[in-house]
Amino acid sequence: MEIKVTVKQLGKKHPVLAEQKVDIDYNDVNISLENLLKLVVRQQVEAFNAKSFELEDEDFAKIPKENYLNILTDTGKVGFGSIYDQRKADLQKAQENALQAFEDGMFAVFYDDEQIENLSQSINLILDHTFTFIRLTFLAGSYW
Image (cartoon, rainbow, N blue to C red; front, side, top):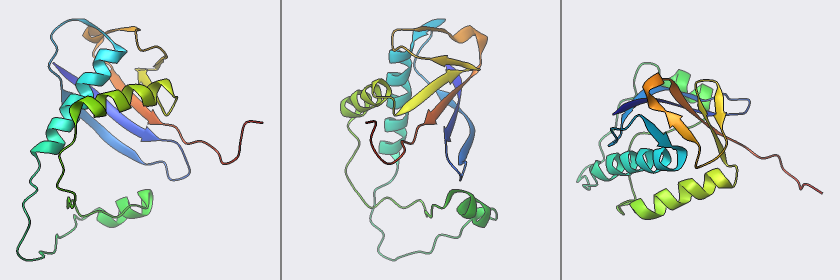
């Protein structure tokens, strides 16, 4: 099944990744948020692990795309797509981390304009709305 996902981060920079379609291995109409997160993490881990880790004999300059400077000034992040760590991602650990991060309030999940607040909450995929994942940033200091 194909779902639409957008990732955002709150803050002055407002980095937004474009909406992308994610293909998950699921065929039912309803799904819990916990299962959805596990399936999205599985897809992302498989995509990461499929990338090439071959070491290059020469250091080839990767030419940036036309809009690279705009992306750089909007996000403040420089990257050339190189992977220097040759370890593969651990699916089980990645899924546990995602669930724990949600429970700890590190990110929020919205389906259309409705926030999903519970891992056991059922989501109707037949509506074909976009999932929005928002990374939350905490202020410096303490609560007391």
